[in-house]
Image (cartoon, rainbow, N blue to C red; front, side, top):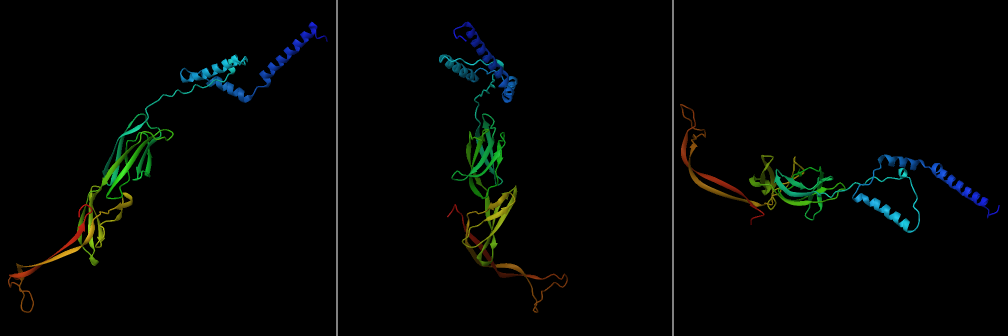
Length: 308
């Protein structure tokens, strides 16, 4: 074949056209992937155009990529519109008001603390966390409450007097803490100490008197000289019992004896030791006499922590 002849040029052109046609047929039918086809069909059903605003950044990125291809002289592949993967429109996020705890208050009554607070901002989707803290800030107890909770009653106090620190924290959906508040609550149970008498060995019996569940309650303790009045006792409304330690210390007993003469009516005895009686009524005969009367006074000496 003469390469300079027109027939040769026609044959070469025919071969090139055939190759292009076969390539197109292969791309159309031979290179079809089931996963890709399914994704294309899915994108046709659920795909939506990108909205205005922040989502328009997707279109800007595509325009920049096309501009770079044109500047470099390369041609962009032509893809049918119906075969393009459509991007779901990203959700436009609006900046809300983060939740926060305000007006946190704590009241003490009936050996327990009740917290109350008010929420501002959005509802804390992750709930509300209530924590009781130690003096160094570590968490002693913690509980997670529903988002719309505004009150919480803590477990009963373990002592007659203590200071409790609480922290109430709103939680976002990912458990991030925002807008927390802290509150110190003075817990003091009003009580009195009564002396009930002496016991063997020089000990004394005392009663710690207070009001519990609306009723007068007394816890008794036998205390040796020099010991502190009170101690831990189990209670129905406390898991580990209540510490009834008062801080009062028993120093010892002090007694006094007083003798004085008093005129009083005493029975009349016969010489044989029998009681004299009225012959008619049979009642015991009485007569006035001056007799010694002995008065014994017993006191428990105690010291309180707030007084010498």
